[in-house]
Amino acid sequence: MSRFSSLAELRAACRELPEADDAAAAVVIDRQTQLTKPPGSLGRLEDIPAWLARWQGRAMPLLDRVLVLVFAGNHGVSARGVSAFPASVTAQMVANFDAGGAAINQLCRAAGADLTVIPFDLDVPTADFTIGPAMDEAGFLAAVAAGYDAVPPDIDLLCVGEMGIGNTTVAAALSAALFGGDGRHWAGRGTGVDDEGLRRKCDTIDAGLSRHADALADPLLAAMCLGGYELAGMLGAVLAARRHGIPVLLDGFVSTAAAAPLAKVAEGGLDHALVAHASAEPGHRRLAEALGKAPLIDLGMRLGEASGAAVAIPILRAAVTCHAGMATFAEAGVDGKG
Ligand SMILES: O=C(O)c1ccc[n+]([C@@H]2O[C@H](COP(=O)([O-])O)[C@@H](O)[C@H]2O)c1
Ligand SMILES: Cc1cc2nc[nH]c2cc1C
Picture (cartoon, protein in one colour):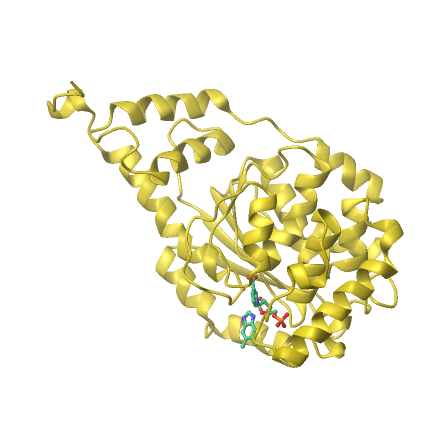
């Protein structure tokens, strides 16, 4: 039996979230004011240690164990010509991850992170959401539970990402369901569709939104009707991270859309997550803004597979290393502000 036996049970779990450790964050903020630099001069590198402390519940944040989870799934809508690549690429890229040949393998090595790839049954895509719900309730809940159970409770940081041909259409549809707007507002070129492909994408999203109009007021039902297995897996992983006291880096458009229902179900439900980078997929900036999150970096990337999150890990390491290692004004004998 799945960890969540009904949408109602999942909704309850999404609302039973531990509070932030404000005392741990206060210790970090106090130390920041004493370190040998003009206040604020390290910019967001000053906010990161406090954010990590708040969600790790540690006054001296650690990044010893960093895990990147990549979920993979296939999509019924990909048969509608919404991607520049065939659905067969999803399984082929999973094989490439396993062989160590993808970008994410190199980026994890560079960042000192472990990588786990979790493919759902790639021979069984979700249903075409223009015809019916992408998943039935049992399938959706099982995928959320698989994501939840993939998170070791003792890691220091979780990065989530995905692989799934067609899933920028899915992410756009889910974003529209959660935040309003139509296909044109949320769709981009994904892996590189031409103008015709982009039109098909917008039409597909609009058809899905009108097909499921009655269900979309409920964020979890929206994720079930318009989402995908790998998005459900990411939702479960981000929920588990919050409940285990693990801060999260979201990757691009697809992973941010996957986690967004948590913010809709519970106020502050994504406070333990940062958007690592601004994807070149245009809907991502809109989505990050709708969630009140400023992406950490903007490198024009649009790969997915957690690549943007992995690139941001060294920035977090830099912030923690400065925080832990810098001398205070008193220790270094440096005069404070006059
Ligand atoms: O998450 C993003 O920002 C993102 C933007 C563009 C493409 N992707 C990746 O590309 C695939 C989806 O693109 P598409 O064109 O097939 O919808 C999927 O495997 C994603 O990992 C991901
Ligand atoms: C080759 C390829 C690699 C990817 N990695 C994530 N999404 C992808 C999509 C394609 C097409």
